Length: 290
Image 1 (cartoon, rainbow, N blue to C red):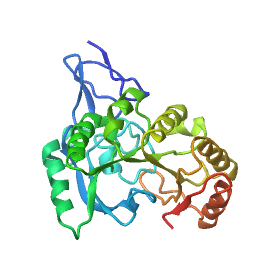
Image 2: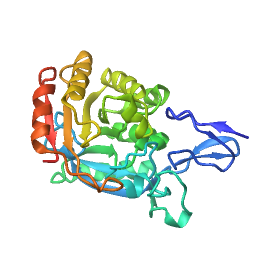
Image 3: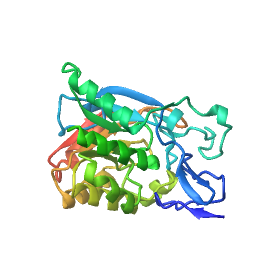
Image 4: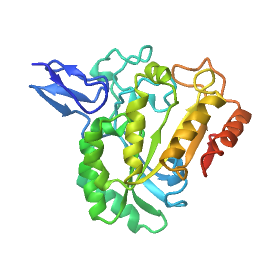
């Protein structure tokens, strides 16, 4: 029978055996299951600044982990090999055969938490916990929850790098275990979000709730011809300031990749102008990728 997945704003209605838009959740005998649970595609010890987080344990490192799948269709995705796994690169939608999926290794929550703890004990590594990143981690939120519980029991931190399109129900499941988030605020126009397969109001609601419970930083990738007006970044900064003027905003340089190789990289001078405009409202605006 058809079953609706309520993890994100798409509310995919799936027939038995059918996957959702994210490519990671599937109807199995009437139950929506997380098919990418524990299926790891990427694992690395990264500087915390790479997430990017500027005001959360600066100078430390964090074990970063990713799986596959994403519920958006950003044509500039830098991790499209895993986030768009199983999708046709020309459309970002059509499913491809299983042999075209990325290689994965199953790692249980206990194994991953234990690995993070081992890297914490190696003092030169400087590991403070786990960052769930690379693809969209909330399409497999159950794995994030189960691992984050164990990481917290070990006295370490959990960081979530997300597009912020999950439902509040899912967010509430995770908030007790998450210490910091970097949330993509991809722009401040609903029509732009629609082009990416998302919804601006869903993301604003997610940010508002997350900022009440944990450390939050925001990232906007500035894409030429899409979300690069000073008026838009000013509206965005003004809205963020109403939540908390201390929330750091990263305005980040776009480079041509994936299905946007025909665009020029973002003009660096424009990013500095955006920093100045946003700085009228926010205490901490960071220019990235320059």
